[in-house]
Length: 586
Ligand code: F6R
Image (cartoon, rainbow, N blue to C red; front, top):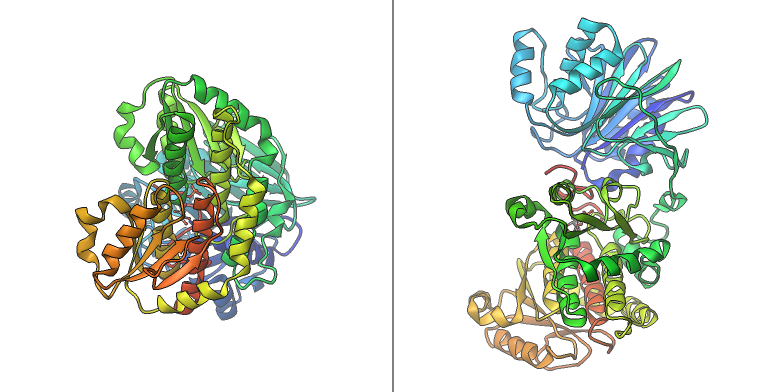
């Protein structure tokens, strides 16, 4: 989603801001802009495109001054245009803002402000903040009073940074991430630690409902009622500074190739947590699992294996749907929330609902300083390092590793999971990309792909379809094998490709039969299996292994196929169109 950065210090701000925005590109955006203050004047440049493109066109990084704000926008209100890009100046130009989130009551505020003579240039909800701040500043002449009055008038979820022409910076947070980087002689305000990690690893995670004011004489944190509040400086993991592609063509490819290692590191820094969670699960009356997208697909796998191997019943609810079944959340239960970023608005909303029902919140999360982690009673960290590619890859397999560890504990270690063997299987697939690259070429001009799997392999089929959609823009759908004859068979003809997930386990022969039925209708079959078959037009071989390890090998093969098909189609695998890494709006 949108990224915010603010700088206040002794260095020239614009190049630092542009660098920070580049670091946060993975979050997804369509336009970019920077504003700085120098000699009590605000200068601003912005435009549609990638940071590099816009910078080459308008030289964002040459703006003067040691105080500045920057933003990458992911359109919610209004088209992708230069005017709608942030920062937004107020109509007098005496202040400018960058904003992340949504202002629910912007229409009524805008009408009122227009009546009072304030001029709006953009279609965004954000510009309302700029003009409201201006109005309140004109009335109070004091930045603190201005922020307090403004946050009392706007409704919605937001993080914003406002820069005043007198050189003061103010930032407020309400249900959108905002982190302060504390340097030697400077401060950073950012939606993501990557915005400032190059300069400092000291960070203050702002609490919801707090705002901060920075000027020559003070650094002042208050709550929305104006009361001064304390804050803690945390050390941010330096590894987030490693967010470079290295020798890989894309972050996505690098992250796919990290999985033989990340699978072994899952949960390593929160070892006791798995044990604690297992204990809670054993004694809980109801267990709910939630997540969005890929993280929800992990929950679907967890549901199946917890039931099969530990006889534990779990109810899975998509985070975005939980609000519609909030009545069915029984009091004093457990909610396990799965998320890579820990910032997905839908997940946070689900947690809020469960908390109201007195549920214990357990999170399986990569960013252990995220909003989700801070809302949780127990945190299990994925510990897979920064995932920059918008499509989730290594975070998914790390989520599975954590779930497997939980199942292992819950079965009183009766189930043996050999993570070294899983890691070796992943490596074997990654070491032989040629066949997958060749098959990817065949997908270049295809418009429909179906992915079929049974049992534990069905959630993998759903996750596979999600990866293909995101990376290749090809329509893709997961099909539960047994349902083929109840509808999807009608779609099979010579124009479609069907990926059959068919490891040599209890699902093998039924799935092979499905493959035959599909082939008889003329569709092309890609078999992902450790057993060769003449039913497959193309075969992606995975190593022979056990029931719990197969899904990980299967998804590695699919991630590779999706990545190479994206390359064939010349789409950008790291930043799929219209998508954002952290979906911080509902
Ligand atoms: C899929 C993908 C998204 C995320 C979803 C949840 O490749 O990246 O579907 O899985 O937006 O994000 P987190 O896990 O950060 O809550």
